[in-house]
Image (cartoon, rainbow, N blue to C red):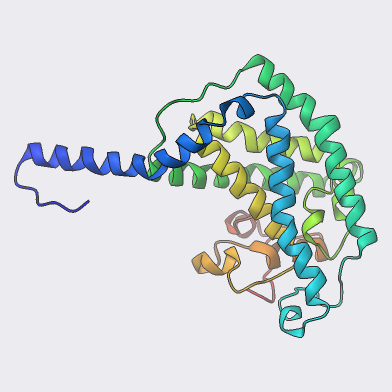
Length: 276
C-alpha cells in the first residue's frame, strides 16, 4: 500500500494496513484449506498428501521422458541424453515408494496424529513471514541433509547398508527421488518435519514448505536442465539444481548438498557441472 507519512499515527496506521494486506493475500487460500479440516484432521491425510504431491510432481518429467525420446527439441534438455528410463525401471520405483508410504510413513504419521492432534488457526500467516520461514526451512534441510549425506558416503558401512540403494541409477530420473532405503527416507522425513516445528511455522507455511521441498527434490533427480529450472533462477551459482545432483550420482564423491552449493564449496566437495 502506498501512503504519505505526515505523523507518527499515520506511520502506525500505514504499517497496520500493510500487514493486513499481507495477511489477506493468503487468507483466501487458508480459508479454502481450513474448510477441508475433516480431511486434514484425518490420520490418513499426511501420507496421502505426501504421496499425491510426489507423484504429481513426477508426472511432468515422466511425460518428458516419453516425449523427448521422440522429439529432438526436447532431447537437448536431457542432462544424459544417452540414458532414458524404461518402464521396467520406473515401475519398481513407484511400487517401492507406495510400499514405504503405507508400511513406514503411515505408522509414523499416525503416531504423530495420535499424540498431537491438528489444530488449525483461523488467521492466515503474513506473506513475508511465509516466504522467510520457507527459505529458512530449506536452508536448514539443506545443511542437515548435507551432513547426513557426507557421513553416509565417507563411512563405508553406512553407505553399503543405508545409502547404496539410492545410487542404483547413475542417470537419475524423477521417480528415483524416493528410491532409497527406509532409513534414508525416514531421516529426510524427520529433517523436513522438525524444521517447521522448531520455527513455530503456521500450518499453511508448513504445507507450502513440504510442497516446495518435494518439488525441488524431484527436480534435482529429474535428469533435465530446463530453461526455467530453479538453478537458472537463483543468481551467482548459489543453487546447484539438477545438473549439480546429477553429477553427484555420476561421480559419487562430490556435490553432497541437495539444493544450495555453499556447503560443498566450504567443505571442498563442490564440482562444477557442465550446465552451470
